[in-house]
Length: 373
Image (cartoon, rainbow, N blue to C red; front, top):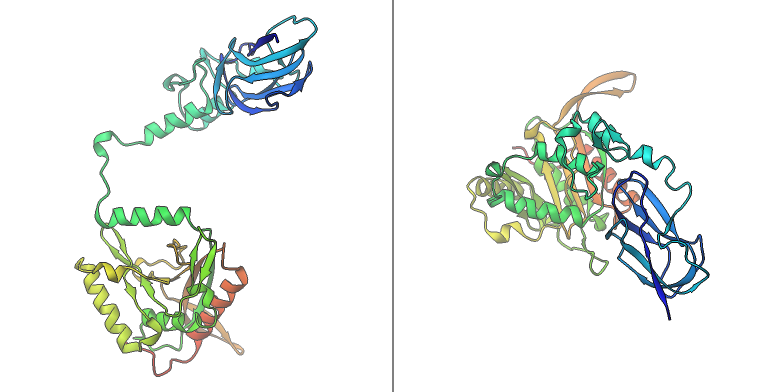
């Protein structure tokens, strides 16, 4: 059985290499003259090449993503019918309209389509851009790499992450890969609260109460098993900032603690966080997270979801607000609240109902369990 090599054709004044984007044929498939063989990327332009005769695909010379050079074999055909006038595959008419113009030289620099415009937008001189393309043509990737190199500090300026910042990087890198975060926000009217009421304690009490109505927000999710597990206890992670990152100590079984006990627990973890004296056990087992943004002056924040948790709440800086009471406007205080949740397992309705429940609890008159700092 005779076979022939068929080669990658010349692309006019284009590059000498091409990336195989997609094969349109398979081994042992019968093709005819004009059948599309492959789609190729030749410097941000995708073109198609076709068979010049009938035959059976005997070999594909490369995988998708591989690069081939003009004149190298791209396929091998066997059982060929008729005469073979050329061993170069055919560039499909229309697939590279104005290809020579698109890849035309910009001044003395050969530039792929879009690359010159991007360089102009980024105020980069083409002469300052080096290319890794074998054909010497400057591509969009070359322009992007050049701007990244300008923004990258010298090697001597890099500092290895350590301590809390290293731990923060590891946790949040995992969170970025292992959740689909969504966020809802609302404000609670807390104008009736005493001036010395603690937002943190009141918020902990609110979360501990409302998760019993909507327990999915206090559940754990295992993406490897695609399984959700409810948690009987509310183990609340409290975000605490340190100079080089943040630490999230945990108040275990928060719903079982009254205001005084919560205040004592907060004071204890605040002191231990400041002194870097937290035990490893105090940083584990959170089922839901709370961040208080008052000290940052921020109102809303989308927090990371730390697996296996599925929700995190942020309370912002209280602010004065106008509220219509009957026919009169009165000045009150409002508390901004952000709820970030893993939308893979928590629906918008569940998240909204949980947030409404928090607003309801916060706007209720302070009861005997409310703490005054």
